Length: 208
Image 1 (cartoon, rainbow, N blue to C red):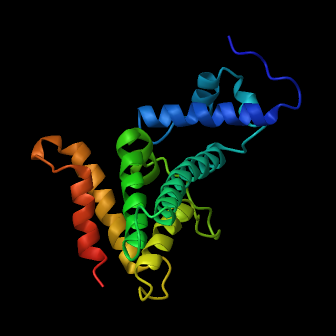
Image 2 (image 1 turned 45 degrees about the horizontal axis):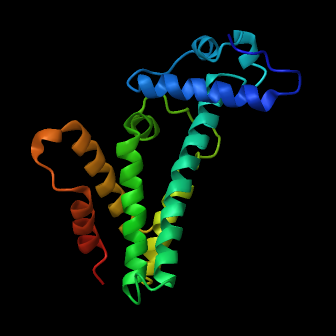
Image 3 (image 1 turned 60 degrees about the vertical axis):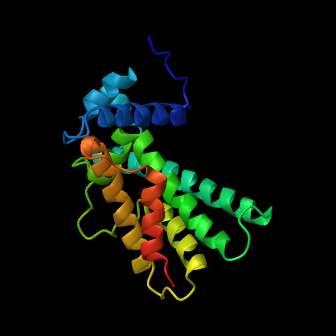
């Protein structure tokens, strides 16, 4: 049985609700999303407790997607930093260093998607995506993760252009998205290994 949170421990309750909602959605990403009552049940709290943290399901979903996209951005940033450290130590010298950074980010993105397929589909394909409020600004969920890739592409191709994200970045993202979904949905096609596929995409999109 769940231990009742002491008064003032709202952050713990919020984290438990987000974790419960994430598990429900990852297990059934094809549905429209759980109800607040289902989230409360999974977290082991009364339905009224949910409303102490979130006004409605859309607000809860918004917070959940922000949190999960932040996890993706953190993994991509770590990959980019690792590639930069390798370059500084001489493992990827000269002109190869920026390209190695793009490669590391692409591999980290695909690894995230293949390691956590339920979460990946939830973030990019789920009908449970939180709705945009009428008249409100377009949500920026996922943009920090995309910026990690865009920064790496710009380091590799300084003449890529002023648009943010660049068309090269968007093409690479589209290629990776297609690869991970098709590899998951059509595993019997006879796919080459992931690194070889990524290298082919880099050769196609990063040619000066």
